[in-house]
Image (cartoon, rainbow, N blue to C red):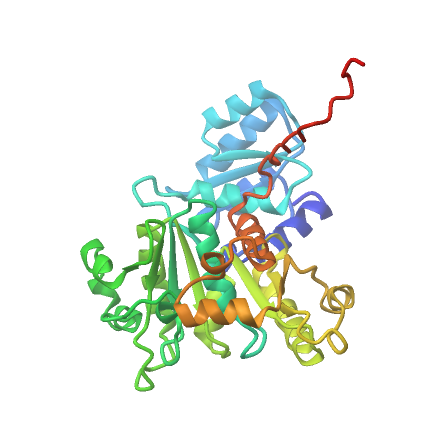
Length: 387
């Protein structure tokens, strides 16, 4: 590295959840020093090198580096010269990509990912994890209704995976019965294929599917982390979006799921005990996931006790994260939906909670920039009416 800013960016990128399988070593020097260093050691899969050189001098240094690189090594160059002719020359010389300074964490991680993408492998669906800061805060309800909003309102294909193998309610909440539980998928992940997946998958609608559990106390709640990753990657090949309904427990596999997810949503209520636990979760997971992948916070049951609940602004200041949405408390509508095996939007589509679920779905799917709907003109008023 030749600048402190680039070094700091790479150090932060190394902490990103997408880089957890990578070993990152940072050494000082330019392309020339890199060529000399790798002339005596085995080269890694990816070399990221910053340079102040340009033109023929830069191309000559890169040729020296290439001579010392093992087969299969990729080179990502960081520079300040924004010249399309030089860029084309660099790509022709064999480097994998070129990034302009100042370097951004997101662009660095995304470029590194793109370099190693196998075009023959299927694209994995977006993985979204829902987790309650405490038991009973309504995390499953938020997960299920957000899945409904993605399917019914945003027309996304969604699969809800119930990971509470002992007490799971996903299938029950959608008024469906489970014959083959998701727990069976974890016991034999190597047997999974599209035909078997279709047998496990319960179709709630054209857009929303459920991988439920038989909710048996005889099930082993401690999922093997390797089996979890294998099953989830398979599921992500079969659908558009995968939503994880994660039980309130703290184990290796739970932490793995919360860190590996593309988006992680932590749900809490506006009380002091939840504030403490939510703050701890946000700090821990943000540190593990990196600056570019911070968790999302949702507050549920707002208004259940207006005299004692912590105000949203104070909650935000204490936790250090602004709630994406605040879901209002309404025991009648939520209770009716639960008793009927429906989502809140099926019972009362114009309810404020449904608006919160749709807003959350838009944020999680990157649909927040949708154009605002044009307001209809009011009839009966003409400012230019002739007298």
